[in-house]
Image 1 (cartoon, one colour):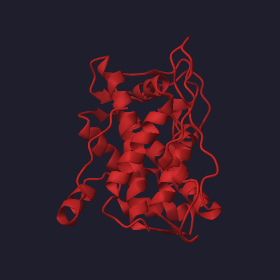
Image 2: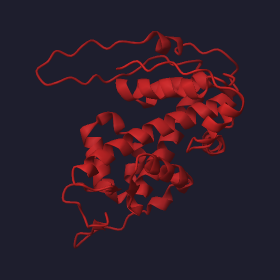
Image 3: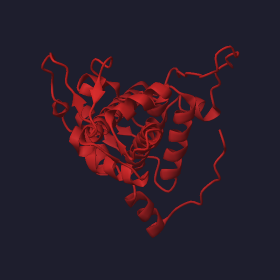
Length: 259
């Protein structure tokens, strides 16, 4: 992975402008955390969670954009989401959303029309609407902002899927962060190493920064930035996306208090 140059520490109006550019606001993050835990969420923890969610959704959109580009399209359809996940297992996050979305139900034989709407088979069972996931719609504005930043648009069904995945991912992140606080750290780390067929698989490595998250400091009533970073190591099992999310979260919070 190419090392990114260190960014200068942000402060004052410059910090505000960077934070205002985030598609997922701290108020939204705290609303999700309130659904999961009564613990206080620090300012830096809220920004870290927003940053991690942004990184994950950006990577998913980029993968879908590449799939659409192969068909000379700039408007993303649910099939592009499936292609992105098929090509990169690291993007398979927020998978509880799959139970609520027709995109992921009975993938074999699913067809889409020119507008990205699923063409129904002759017989289909009734299923819960995506709106069954409480609060998923809260992410729509942020999703659309990320789509615009990558020069694409998406059909409503695709926006709904990205919306739901973001909601589920952040909810899972909140649960894991609360668990880290309760248990005093992360007891073990999981990782998936991708290798070419026929080539030896390199042994998994554990970065010193990840080891540092295994033991938690601080009170048991507040979710801090490092708790979000530790939860990220649980949620993101692949090395590349996980490292990018951790790096960008640290950069996004470097001028805020860790507690």
